[in-house]
Image 1: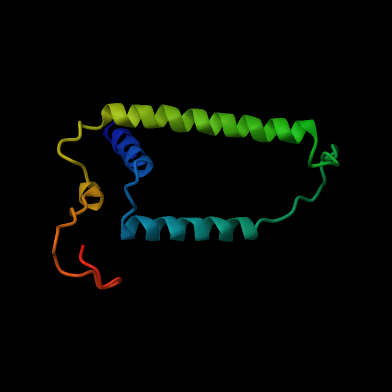
Image 2: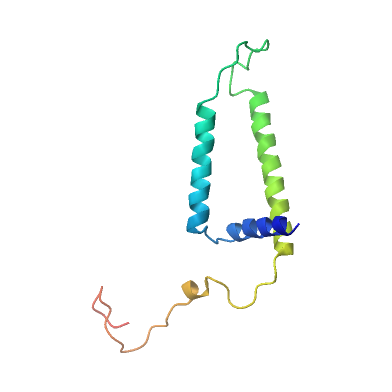
Amino acid sequence: MRATRRRRAGAARAAQGVKLGDLQATLMGMASAALFFVISHAKPLARLSPQRPHPDIFSLYVFASILGQFAVHLFFLATTYRGALAAMPPVRGPGPHAAARARPQPTQGGPPCALCAAPL
């Protein structure tokens, strides 16, 4: 239960703009490379399926399938995000991006701007 809460909290932080750490990004890259390697070494079936695939990729069946997958993924993303926010402790303070939003106010007669050679 505790690991599930930790995973949900990580997903909620990612949705709020918190970046991955170096180790996390490295492990994710190695895992995706391993999955591509496994898929590329798959063996073909000895016998074909008796049912033919759809001849047109722009059919109603394909469109409905893609739309259904999108709806299921969006539902689970929203549900997990809400659950993770509920499991996370409340945020205290101005937040991690407060320094990026704070801008110094221009002063009269201060040092000149290096780009335009005019006072700020």
